[in-house]
Image (cartoon, rainbow, N blue to C red):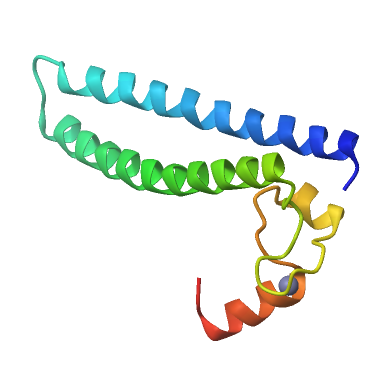
Length: 118
Ligand SMILES: [Zn+2]
């Protein structure tokens, strides 16, 4: 992969990373606000519980994505980015543009999904 292209993906990954951290910060502020309301009726209590669930599932997904982004950034630094972790073939740039944290080429990804292994 050419240097300019690597830089393109690095910036893209850093942007994704910043967006998640920004979201996490906002979510934290929101959950703090939720907990400091004085008087609550039944509807409020229910909606707070609902929100808390969403916050938890979101942070799990985001945490995973954050790990994937960090791993992709590591690979960019060590020169193994865009190489399939399964078969060592190149992952197409088109695929990486759609999913910058892709670890496998399209063929291996399909095989892994069919086997049900993550
Ligand atoms: Zn592969």
